[in-house]
Image (cartoon, rainbow over all chains, first blue to last red; front, top):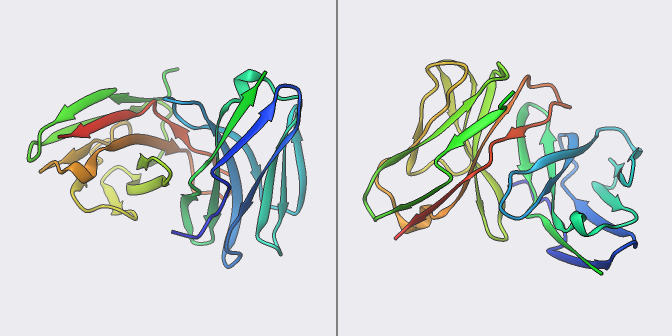
Length: 110
Length: 114
């Protein structure tokens, strides 16, 4: 693997904010994806970052720092339906295949 | 538009049996992939294909085979099932190999080898 690290589990309250961090090796980096996966379902695309900075899409935002090999996914105004696993995936130069982290299971409580 | 379709959704095999997991996509994507997902381990690439007639090994190819006779279909074959192959299998496709190209996943096959 490509040593993509993210926390195993996070718990938050409905309406709150949660930040999921992801770190990866910087050599050959060519883009980072976040996918959402509900239990028993397929992963679905959330966001893509290749340049430094914040990409905002409604309640979800994704940040990237290429020099630090670091990204986070920010989930705002949490809803019960946001309970899912969030997968960080990295594409490296000359290797169009995605390498996935183990995923972070987010549990939203009322 | 069906996207990526996988069959079956569930299967139980005995050790040593063989089976084929079917995957088809109707988006005319050139790139197709097979991943397995084990608890706490993330998605691991088994095999991939960049077009009809072309396949290559991923991270964990042992015990599996694939073929890609058409753009649409990318079946995964298990010849001698082993307990270590108990997993959830996902087929995926993408349009190009450009950096920003996202994957479209099938709904998965849960396989148990007993």
